[in-house]
Amino acid sequence: MPEVDALKLLAAGLAVGLGMLGPGIGIGILGFGALTAIGRNPEAAGAIQTNMILAIAFAEALGIYALVVAVILVLPLRLDLLVRQKGKVAWQS
Picture (tube, helix red, strand yellow):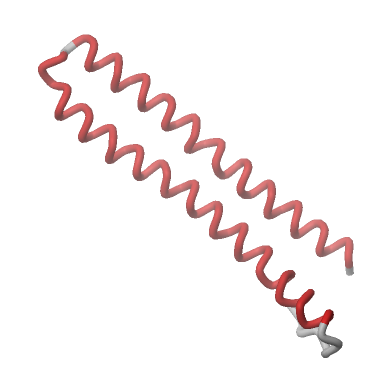
């Protein structure tokens, strides 16, 4: 069973790593586009900045979802380990 636990930890790490990669690239592209647009039309800076911040919040939410999935994958392993250390019967996952 340790192999299964190791694979779950690996899956959690990949979920966070790959799940944060997309929003990170997206936020970089958003920032580049907003700064380019502000450079071309400085009068519209307020509207561009508002829309950019809203889009960044939505992109960041995707990264938070990946973090939640990783926590859901790891938490039962941690609870199972605590139960095993106290000498009780481990609950089935």
